[in-house]
Image 1 (tube, one colour):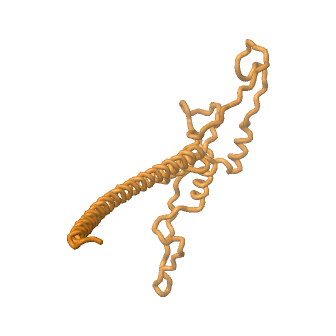
Image 2: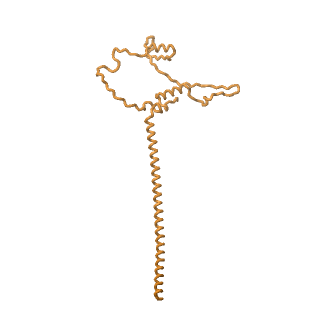
Image 3: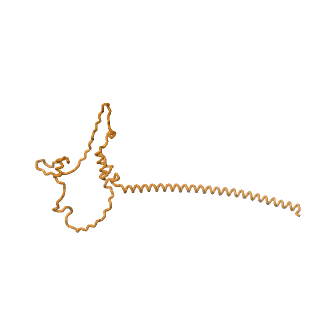
Length: 218
């Protein structure tokens, strides 16, 4: 049986062990807290860096999308430019891209004859009689242009041409009995273009003879 002194010694040892346990427990708590704070800080930093990286990638993707859209628009513009001609745009006819002509072999034997109509070949052209008949029927406007000293002896040569003049048709609208001017809606502006000149401009543009931006009256 343990003596009183032995019991006291054992009790002291137990108290020391318990104190050590409490001390270790406190140290563990401190370590846990420090460790937890450290990892929380590192996780926050990682989250911040990840967020910044994601934002940078999003901005880069947006920039690439914008550049891609611009390139697509430029490609579309160039395609339209290549497909444009004098028939579907205001481009003049000479700007049309001509297709590559196929090389056609010439199997004819080489000749010493000059290019063009050969001697003795009967030509076909408009006769004087046809022109003079049209002048008599008032189909052609007849202008006489004298060359040299005027006399009764001359030789006539005809040059067929056309003359386009701008006609300013002044419509004068007078007051009626009530003092009112009855002006139709088509005359809402002081100046407008007539149907004949509109038809001519439309024809010239549709046929590709003149670019639309060159069809001006004045």
